[in-house]
Image (cartoon, rainbow, N blue to C red; front, top):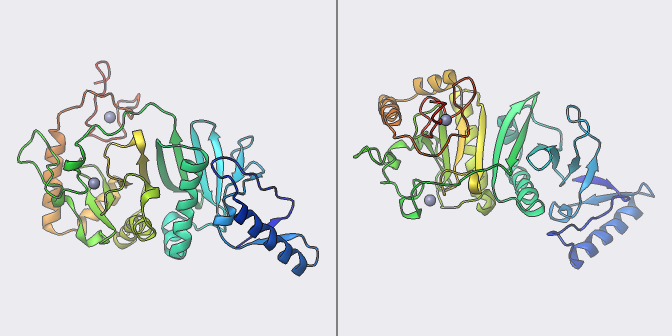
Length: 328
Ligand SMILES: [Zn+2]
Ligand SMILES: [Zn+2]
């Protein structure tokens, strides 16, 4: 529940034109609250939907002096870290110390509302379709970073019929037949059916892929159970294995490499080793198999966006993209 000063103006920016019913409801709430609080001029706003119409500029945050910051819903603060390129979204209420704690201590409805408010800000207010969304911990808190407006080509892989998320028999390593079926990478012990499925990273990197069971392409298309289930698979697994994470990545639009929504959970080498040590022999064999397939993947023509000047790549040793004629 948020308390807002009545001097707050309700700006109706497109595409959130304030409809008459909502506005009337806010006005009547205002009157009730005004008479009950004896002139303290506070408006009690009861639901997030009535707050979609409120954008409240905030003072610049520490570390982001001169960067525009706004409370964009009851629970989300958004900072234009690099206007037109990068946003940072944070939980506006008393923060959890990290993302796992946030997921574990907040009620399901609050977690769902947090991600829905972010989707409304990105896809609704800012009309962004193509973006890279990254959750990471830091400074005793967690944040959601969003990168957009960069050149990206979108999925370059199989059409819908061969979707890795939907078709259990799809070969993950085309050109290395018989290869490995997508269902073979599934970690049932960490999946949460019927909502989301967890897999080993099919490219043999130190990460995991978490996909909704149903074929959807945007986080905003998930229902509440699927949305909560997808993020929960990640944090339950981290807690169960007892490892930290580097980042959780959810790409949208042209930033994707698969059509099926795919939450990528990246961990460090040590954390991945610890994960493998808790696995049975079968999973460790599977992991070794993936390493071999990944090492033999043919390089794609497309230039890698993650190659660094020092000769390393954020995709790791098995990056399947070209590092360029002068860079290989
Ligand atoms: Zn699919
Ligand atoms: Zn690369």
